[in-house]
Image 1 (cartoon, rainbow, N blue to C red):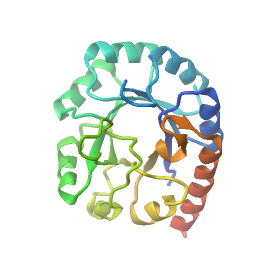
Image 2 (cartoon, helix red, strand yellow):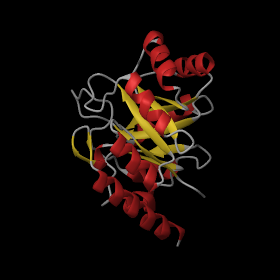
Image 3 (cartoon, rainbow, N blue to C red):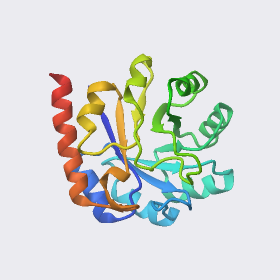
Image 4 (cartoon, rainbow, N blue to C red):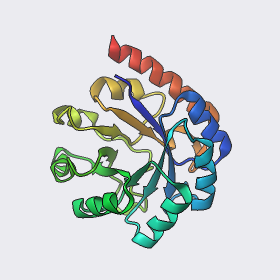
Length: 219
């Protein structure tokens, strides 16, 4: 079964080109001023057009209001909205109806009880994304380079589509995929040389590692 690969927090043509060359199914643009990966909608729209027909564009937002989302959707024309804040199931339903777009809802995971929220969004969000819960006091809800215990996902219904995120990199993706069974993976800080600075060599290394991990999983 094909597995989706999302390279998130893209801000340059060079990084986008490396993601597409590696076979990314999704490319993510972050609209959150506190993030070192924040990008203006107009620039994201320009990059998004370079990915047309090659990968799905994901607009990542954190508790954004309607006015901000209107501007992002109009400028970027994303294929997917990723909600990475405290958006409720009702808010997910509202935004799906407002924009007619696929919506992916991120859930922060640290312990098994955090998975209880899956039931609230299953059948409402088109896809879930499991990310590590940020440390206390952190300003970023994701992209902190932290992983959670992937063994917690062993009891997740395999019929629930989800992406695995949080602390992934070329050195641990084989272990992650041996433990979890995601339909997609999402990486950002794991292919950066500094916060918000994507490294083409790290992107290339990650895709090589993913290819090896998928062979191992198939075997």
